[in-house]
Amino acid sequence: MSHSTLVDTPTQAFDYNEFDTYVMHTYGRFPIAIEKGQGCRLWDTEGREYLDFVAGIATCTLGHAHPALMETVTQQIQKLHHVSNFYYIPEQGALAKWIVQHSCADSVFFCNSGAEANEAAIKLVRKYAHTVLDFLEQPVILTAKASFHGRTLATITATGQPKYQKDFEPLMPGFVYVPYNDIRAVENAIADLDEGNSRVAAIMLEPLQGEGGVRPGDLEYFLRLRKICDENDILLVFDEVQVGVGRSGKLWGYEHLGVEPDIFTSAKGLAGGIPIGAMMCKRFCDVLSPGTHASTFGGNPFVTAAALTVLETIEKENILQNVQARGEQLRTRLRAIAQKYPTLFTEVRGWGLINGIELQQDIELTSLDIVKAAMEEGLLLAPAGPKVLRFVPPLIVSEAEVEQAAEILEKVLEKMS
Image (tube, rainbow, N blue to C red; front, top):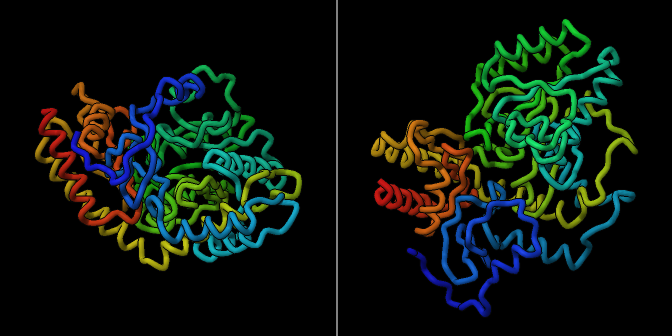
């Protein structure tokens, strides 16, 4: 393996068999155990170094062991880490204010994950349909095929991929799937449902589909979608769990599309790897009231202090400019690689630092094959389906690190070809 070594050596070998004895087998894990990180680098328990272009699946916004985040969490854990939402939490209020002042939202609900944020959005849509649009007895949410919205029963139902739903039936009612970036399909679904006992209450989409293959939304599609929603009293909901918080090169993914959602969600990168979720909405659809939704851990002092530091650091250190520059650099390098290996790849696509390179459908090689080979050379990548290789490094990634990642990928492909 092509790795450099940490100065300090590991004190005890990691026992993979013991881990598998006690932890449920809900993940197909790669055979490395990560022990520590710094910036865009990770080291395993054997002291081997990796260039991290996974970032906890688009989550470690500021990389690993960022000084600002370390200082905040150290101070906050010594001060106060958790109290109930029975009480006002100053850190929570400060974070909500920052988000509102830097987005189209008017209010924020905090929870613990992307799935929970999307659950909150689904509940908000249904309550709005029943209490404001009281003629909607059976509200339906349109979602996209190849989407991904979470692992709870409601969010796997919202997810337009049968592989995530298998063996978990009966699924939640109230969801209909349409192809992504296909406005005619949306119009037909609305018309078909209007003829029955159901009505479309909301359209829930990712501005860029992440797990669905790193597929950006079309500008004209989303502009038309906003108009359709306005004309038909339909809420427009954006799942920004993966693409938000600067990942796209803008603070929020919707800024790429020239439209504002009525509701949008965030999680992954919001606190840089500390668990948090958030559901934001505009004032007119803010219909949740005390007792209708809650979260024990949601918005506690520890995580909201961390999230505020992440957002303020993005702003203070002009990280969005780095995301834009490094994203363009990465796509340029990936396009050159795709041109060099035309029998392997079809296209490169993405925004900012969420990018994918798609493999030819008629070859046996899969994205997972390349992920495993790259790992052997010290580069961590993630698949986005069987035929798309995903690149989501920390937003602080340097020009030299992007170049190094491209060079490692070229070395891997040269060996594989």
